[in-house]
Length: 104
Image (cartoon, rainbow, N blue to C red):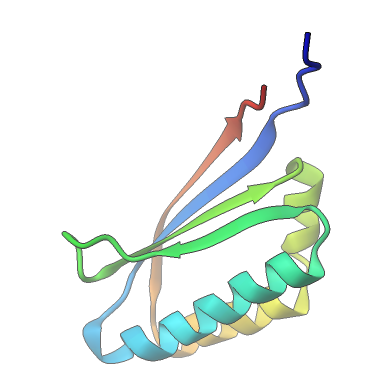
């Protein structure tokens, strides 16, 4: 019988991105994703997703060990850099969903 581990903490933010700032926004998003995975032991996954049917939408799919790992992410330099780019590019974060990902 396998031992079930605790649920992971999932964060799914959604952004509205105007076409003229899409490329610099994606550059900043991918920098944040790269450093989250490389520099944060509690970050398990960080995908930047561009839905085909919504050209002005970018989603992140982030998985952390737990809420504490996500809270630590909120304090990182790379997130502050991303937030500054988001503000400069006038990108709107429209929805943030939080969920538990059951492992087992």
